[in-house]
Image 1 (cartoon, rainbow, N blue to C red):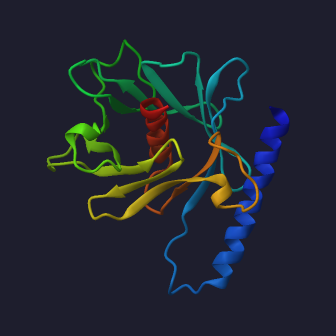
Image 2 (image 1 turned 60 degrees about the vertical axis):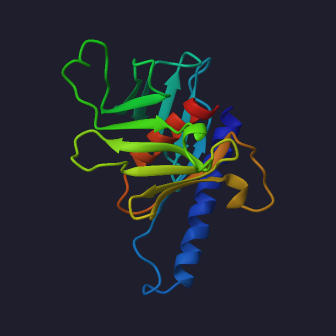
Image 3 (image 1 turned 90 degrees about the horizontal axis):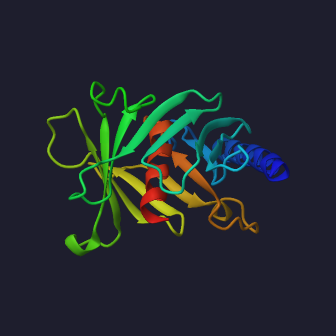
Length: 216
């Protein structure tokens, strides 16, 4: 596991060097603010623990998830130092399709009654919708806007997904790692998360966690 981790750190730096070379070849008129490229490894660095390890283009661990159960009722996304950033909790209403509430920071049983969620993410049941390409909808909890704020479409099992906003703009994208670095295949355990400028990379990673719960 350590050898794989060191290899991914090195590979993430290679991706960064590749992106810098590409940026230098483009003019400032054709490119906006740079995006954030993250390498997602579907494995926890904690022994005997399921989870995720997320490495940035500098080779540093920026996010991690350590789960001790297969289908947990709550997920906690931490930064590289182990500080809780976002917590996700399954909706207890069994009449709803697979729906998760997203909270800022860590949420435990003792404080859910006083802490309000900021988003909720609902799995799309294709039988009820005309577009089989849609995986989930993301709604703001503190907004008067009608309808979803974001839509996730594609195929998580193939690690090919896009998060689009209300204007159909892609704000985050999941790609297979070998789609970035040709000739090397990592299967579905290692993939890329590309986050456009202006969209929170931590929230984008939270959406990855929920897709993994819904479609794995």
